[in-house]
Amino acid sequence: MFKKVLPLSAILSLRFLGLFLVLPVLSVYALGLEGATPLLVGVIVGGYALTQAIFQVPFGTMSDKVGRKPTLLFGLIIFLIGSVICAYSTDIYTLMLGRFLQGAGAIGSVITAMISDLVDEEVRGKAMAIMGASIAISFALAMGLGPVIGAAYGVDTLFIITAALAILAMILLFTKVPTPPRIKHIYHKTSKTSDILKDPNLLNMIIINAMQKGLMTVAFVLIPIILTNTEYGFGWETSELYKAYLPAMLLGLVAMGPAAVFGEKKNKPREIFLASIVLFIGSFLIMGLTGSSTVFVVGVVMFFIAFNMMEPLVQSMISKFAKVHQKGAALGISNSAAYFATFIGGTVAGLFLDFTNRETIGISIAIIATLWLLWTLKLQNPTKHSHLYLAQDLVDMDKLSELESEHIAEWYINETENIVVVKYVSEALEADDIKAKISK
Image (cartoon, rainbow, N blue to C red):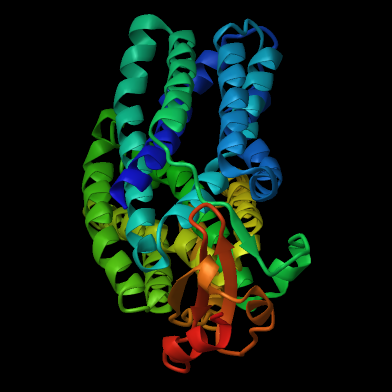
């Protein structure tokens, strides 16, 4: 499992490392370019999330049709071109074009779908946890290295490094990432967005993913401003922010493992999601209402724990609820919604700070999260399925095509390995009975 997941996680983390490296210094750099205004600088900082949102679904659908590896290569090439344009831009509009192109290489859902293709469902939660942890490590490295490298060698150098990371990711793609199996399934129609959104559990997971990522942006806007601005009662120096982020990041990473185990092995993701939302509610109430910096840090820690408890389960649950032919499209829709929420979350947080006080912000977000909690009560835990694997030459294809049961989720053919796979409810059906129905 690790040999399959680690190269893909490395590709995703290299891409995120490139995106994150410039964030601590990008706004100051952009303001110095020809034609810059505060509004355009804001678009440049968050614009990549907008194009990520727009292109998640096309990339996910493309990967279902033409294959995961070609789609990943195409996305990395676009990201590389965008990074080079950013590096050599001399005016605000050229930089904006480069940032939009960086986001347009939207490969996140493709990598998640590829992990789902390569990794058995029984260990998929661990795979998603590895992927989530690699992104978290990239973020931590970027926050430390970005300002230092940018100050010493210039922000344009950071974009050159980002382009080099894209090339390294391409090398990993063709040297370390295995080719996923060709899957032939019984569904001969293309995935429709309406079909995915009509599935209540998939819709719920899309909302969960979007709310989680939207609240992340809200938090990253509010936390540093509230702690460093004297009008909110704390007046920290920027150099002191690590006192809030370090314990929060560490405890959040610690919480990720048990949450993944409980959600996957115990098949209780619903309970993990509900507990996380309760923590979100508490964290924003604390950050909005407390006058103590120590208690405020407790709220920050609660937020990161809630976020990281969800992170390894969200993608895994979407891939479990989706049919084989829907995975790429479903993950694309979900990630698209998440990036839109990322863009909107930062905008809303900024507007809140302009027009209201900290207490109102905390209470308002807590109310929104409470409504989210009530909605999520409708989520069902996924049905536990078993998988029957049979050599294709032992299966009567006519009998297989007629195989129908409410307890069979789907069947498909792994053409690379010549294996027929039947996904069924083991509590209701016996493997030997299914085998007898479809054997030659």
